[in-house]
Structures are given as C-alpha cells and as structure tokens.
Length: 217
Image: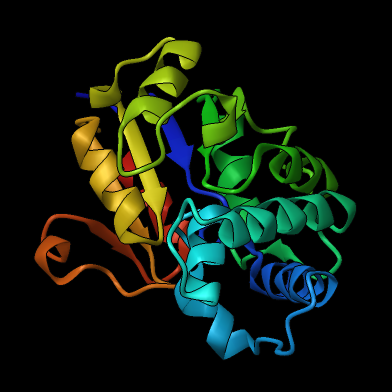
C-alpha cells in the first residue's frame, strides 16, 4: 500500500514545547497558591498524556480531583495567553513538512494539548499552513492511545489509515497508530520519551526527523 498521508503528534514531535509547558504550569501553580515551581527536568516526564494528566501527576492527586481540575483549567488558560513564548519547530521539521506538501500529500495533527492552546500554537509557529486538520480531545474525541482522532483525520484527508503514517514521540502516539492500523508508525527520537521497549522493533525510528521522508521511497 502506498503512503498517501501523514499524521503528527505536536509536542515533542513537531515542536519543542517543553519550555512553554513548564512556564505555563509554573504560572498556574503560582496563581493557585502552591509554594513550588518545576524545572525543565521535572516537567518532562509529565508531557505526552495531556494537560489534565500533567496536573494530576504534578499535584499527585486523582485525575478528577477538584484541585487537579483547577490546575488543568488554569494551565490551559495561561497556555492560551502564552502559546509559544519559547517553543519552536525541531530541526528538520520544516524541511520535512515542505517536502511532503510539495508532493501534494495531506497532513494532520493529533495532540493531547488543550484545544484553545493548540489553535494558538499551530498558528503562531506556522503549522496551520501545512495541515488539513488539527484535533485535540476537547474537539470531542477520546485521547490517544484511542485511535479516534487519527481515524477522523484520515476521513478528513480522504485516505484510509492503511495509507497513512503516524509519527509521535510517546507510548500514547505509538499505541494510537497501531490501534488505527496505520501503514507506518514512526518515532521521533528528539522527543520527550524513549521508545517503548515492546514496540522498538515495530516502529520506524527517526534519529533525524528528515528520515521520515524515507517512507516515501
């Protein structure tokens, strides 16, 4: 089956959002009266599962706890105000997107980032120019690793998952790609997590992001 489309995770895959995630999480902690702040190193393990999971992990409280929800909503509000103060595309991303676009192949983004923050970030960093559709769970879809957002993107692009490459940097992305039965699941090594051991032999690993273009050969 020929590759006809691409789906990307956002944070840790297309953009280095860690500095912005840390800054906005710390703004939320300060506003809510907590007496601690997080370093980049302390923030990184919490990236990839969405803002509510981040809030739950940071506060060490259940996902549906009122304190967790307050942190989640405050974080999302700050992210909308400060979408890309520090973030930028990873090396090789723009070149890769330009090449895929030049070949006339559609692309989409599926992310755990809150929708109102995602809209601001993709616009600020020029990613909207490449994408057919960008989705977050707030748009009415189950979070990755559920395949729902990927399947909706394929529908919007007019392709089947079996013609689509899913690229991410976390277990959630990899499992979503396999659950959707994508043609190829690729793993960006510049991201925030190591490739899950049980999937190491099943994914296309990308030491350089431009290595993704090899799937077109």
